[in-house]
Amino acid sequence: MIEWAALVFLAVATLFHIASAAMSVWRVRKGAAFSLSAPSGDALPPVTIVRPVCGLDPFDELTLKSTFRLKHPGLELIFCSARERDAAVPLVRRLMAEHPNVDAKLLIGDDTSTPNPKLNNVIKGWAAARHDWIIIADSNVLMPPSYVAEMFHAQRADTGLVCSPPIGSRPLGFWAEVECAFLNTYQARWQLAADTLGFGFAQGKSMLWRRDLLDRAGGMRALGIEVAEDAAATKVVRGEGFNVRLVDAPFEQPLGPRSYRQILDRQVRWARLRRATFPFYYTPELLTGSLAPMAAAALAAPLAEIDALAAVGLTGALWLGTEAWLAKKTGWHMVAVSPLAWIVRDLALPVVWLKGWTGDGFTWRGNDMTVAEPSVVAEQQKPA
Image 1: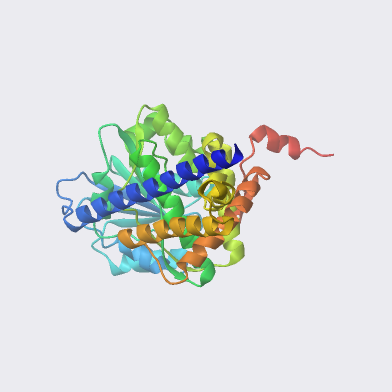
Image 2: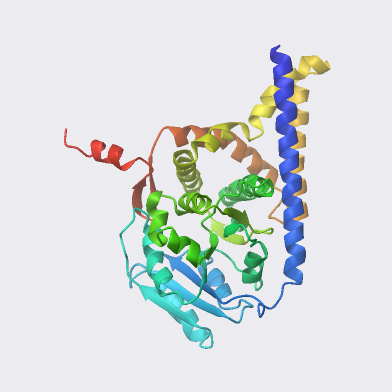
């Protein structure tokens, strides 16, 4: 009985693994074909792009400069910083001076009306935007020239928000390779597959908003209902009767160097946010890596009259081979050490999943935050 249950789980999990990879390849290649022939933007409505900045990442000059090279005539750029003394402010001012013909401004100030520091930084940009379509994009997103057209290409009549998950690129060092393993052939794969099946979830890296929709729901402060603005965005859009959609070919996030601690802290932070906001979808994440299928293969091996170790090896080869095929077909980052990074990621998944259940707090860019309900936080802060 156990052997048959293990075989069924192995078959279903492997089918989902291969199908999600195939859907992702189809989406990305379709998106890549569009980007090669994307319109200049003359037929598209004017757009305001709001980019919050906070500190400097290794490739921020590259990513922020890409904003000034977009092919879209009706474009307004608004950069937002909470503080004048932020390290990113001189860079933004220099880029604006180097591109005087681009309609761009830098706004300084912090709102502090929500628990989310990034959201508080963006509120002033939303209020100042002139156009009815607004893109909110993190400072570490590398925008291709057709960025705006690709965002609009995903827009449909029933779409309230268009997003893009990040695709890790330009990693420096092994732990940055592990972050690519998390971002690309794992997280982006599942997000694209879910969106293809009609279950799109917002991702905060790039968001194309219909201004009237969000203003009707309460404006930017409405995204403060959750500590993660992308989770709040998903709930707001669905609450208004619309869907979230993803672009076909997600945009790059150049990584640079990473440490083990940075990777673990970032993944645990995202895990706790997912657990707090969508626990029903978070619960089965433990089964989405290769460890559970390989364990099932070992249990089911007697049914095929093969050695358990051989069954584990064949299953692992199939799962890793599928990821390699996905990375190659999509053009996502893959080098000789990528399979090792994928293995390390899958070994880390149970640890991250458990930490997602066993804590509420995390630190984001020097800000201590929590996913706990306000009443729980208040109770914890009472004097003994």
